[in-house]
Image 1 (cartoon, rainbow, N blue to C red):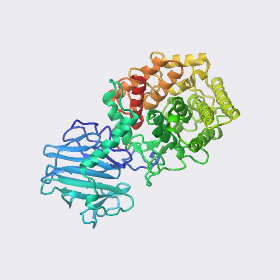
Image 2: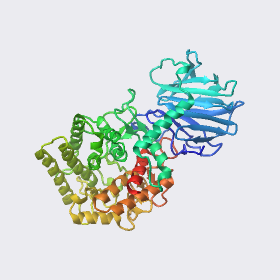
Image 3: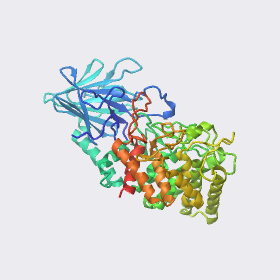
Image 4: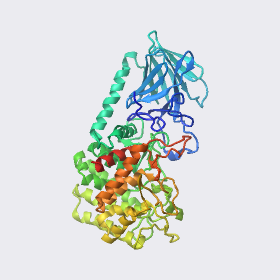
Length: 589
């Protein structure tokens, strides 16, 4: 078996599951004898509620192949369907056969050792269950897990459990997680291991066929990995979590949440499956407070009353989906469309009510966490801050309300009202945030203007020909100038020749949201070849380095140096993998 992904880069899961497999974190390498397989729990709450400096106990249960009482050195292999502990004496295979069920299978006479993390409650490591199968229950992060021997014998051992193979050398086990105690399950009710593998294969291949059945030859080698990364981070309503529609989480362990401004991006990237794109686009509006504000991050259990949010890019994405026939193809009901329109209006009006900048119709960010680009240098000016990107997004929201409303029979007079507001906001932006040569942000309390050169200050390019021709051309020229934002590896967030460049997320690196906005902006400004070059440069970076959402602008390498939650690196991101297959398809053909 050829290794499909490195578990140090991309923990292994499947759509809708809370199970995940990962290698060790701080000491592991992707080498024989330096790897350990952990079964992980993906249930999470709002990431902002967790101490970023401490391990989040993502890894819960150590799984080892044992012979003669010794845990064997191993290599962790995998395919889209399975994870395999490979040793010199044989292998033990695992698949997530059902969303709540992992199956293990080995035929080489190896014992499977199961070592849970010690419970903070103390007491026994496992509790025997009188189900006639020899099952034991163990703690599994915020829930519990039932371990059932399907072939072989389960016994306690120091630090956990072992399943000893039967007389034919076969070991099989089931791992079922639960919050409410499950009803006993008869032996014949468990699927065969091969059937579990086939279940995963069919579901994943169906997703690939609907979303992106092929890519241009240059980018095809990474297509399956990109689709799998996105698919394995998708969540669905299941009666237990707080998700109400399909969403795509950002990444495992570090940011185990679906982010409100990523869903409109994901809807564009998943547009080949129009019904899925519609559901994903609408998903973030399910988490809207009485003032119209959308939650920033939605975890397994959503945390209401957040102080953070993200920019209102929803109108921009909705206009794209409408222009490309996706909404029409998804064929939502009139009732569903009205539901969305009402919520888009409430979200847009939120800013004009609660984020007024005090200058004309302009709105302002109150906190860096609201911007989506938290460490961009201009935010050091202080808050509130009137920024070109925020007001660009709001102008497009107002236009989207008019155009989407028209599909629902909105009167022309009302449509003109929204369009006039959009135009007035653009005019206020030009009057206040354009100095004749470039855009800047403004702190209204002090009058201080940004002096740095950040990509977010150029996002009015998304307005395209809605801007006066001269301003549009100067904006594009500044974006494309030599020595600035363009690199061989994509567009960097702070210009390379800026004295404020500080490598990070938005202070100077190649990141995913930049490459959602910039190709789109260049197209809107009548620069299709430049849009293509921007998109394909980023795709080549991801093809070389993997789907890290932060890459080095000079080397193109994915960032393995940023740490949080006790992890030695950030994992691959569903934000980035979807961007890859979309850009490669749209611009690579």
